[in-house]
Each structure stands twice: as C-alpha cells, then as structure tokens.
Length: 74
Image (cartoon, helix red, strand yellow):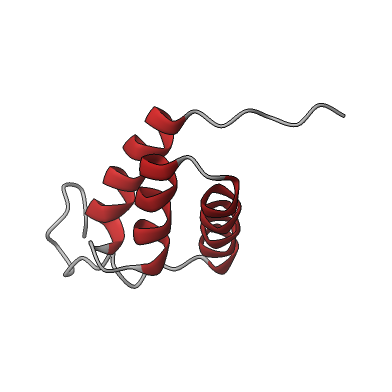
C-alpha cells in the first residue's frame, strides 16, 4: 500500500479551519499549524494522530449554539 503524501498547504488550511472551530490554543490546531510550517515527519505524524483522535472523540465543545439562534431552529 502506497503511503499518502501530505500537502503542507492543505494542512495549513485545515489548521485555520480548526482554529475557527476549536480555537487557537487547541492542541490539534497547534500541531497542525506546526506540521504545516515545518513539514517534518515527526510534526506531521503528531498532527495526524491528534486530528484523528479529535474526529473520533467527537469534540464538539467548541461548537455551542443557543436555542433559536440558528436559522430554522425551533
């Protein structure tokens, strides 16, 4: 099986999106930003591990909406 290559620009965009959702100080955001900047194998591996953990965990603590604030909410 061929190892997927990592696009540093895409990691940077993902870090910006995660910064919006989770905040600038979230460990996954920091790791993705570091991996995008350095491109080192170690940083990429750490960022990937934290991102997958974040996805599986379903961390939605950063996304909270008050009832009735979203369109169509009842």
